[in-house]
Length: 324
Image (cartoon, rainbow, N blue to C red):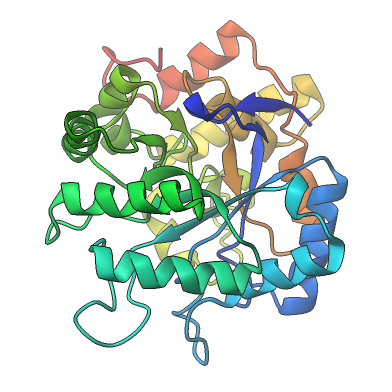
């Protein structure tokens, strides 16, 4: 396993981050513990979750993934060896403060997350998405209070546009508050335009660490989707827009690069992201240990300049942007 600094935090995290959105959704509880064990044994030390995981599954109420992680940390005693990240923003209870990034919601949500995670602090507490109904300075003051109280070490954000990120960082600088140190964007070889045009330039300006989620294009970049073959999956509807001739030709190139390196298409796809500027770690989900081990095989894989350029060229939306 390789490790990198988590943006400007000074924390050292594995380049493969274990995402847990699948816990008690596409992965049952027993298998979730197996995945956590295998991830730690493979050198992983960076676990990402959110309080809303997995409220969309019938019978769930939210907090299921955090509860599993908390039980695992208590059973194994690994808390001091794990960089633990979770997120706040989604609806977790009824009422006017049941969701959002207002102070009242954040204050209660962090206590609930700490209880479920069975820990006294969260290493990276992240705004899951922007809240345009709450002044950004209220959000950053609430986060600043949590850091001063020792309940949170660092804060980050997810799904922010460049303008939203700039507003948040400038508000923190103006008022002397804690600043966002990381960002989670939806970013992969087959989904580049929105992030790279709207947000990436701002991230470079302020020096945040990048932790891409859905780095395998909702499963497309595993190589299991091929012309005339669409495997059964709960994510098939979201993958359909990616089933294009351009992307199938991309898979052919990924096959060739994977063959040259003796690895898999998924590993090459992750290595492309890890080769991009300011990327700290990629968030991977795994329904079982086998999937996990395949993704973890991307750690240490370095694509040469020609391979990086060719993959960037084939997935660029304009010849003027080639994935510098």
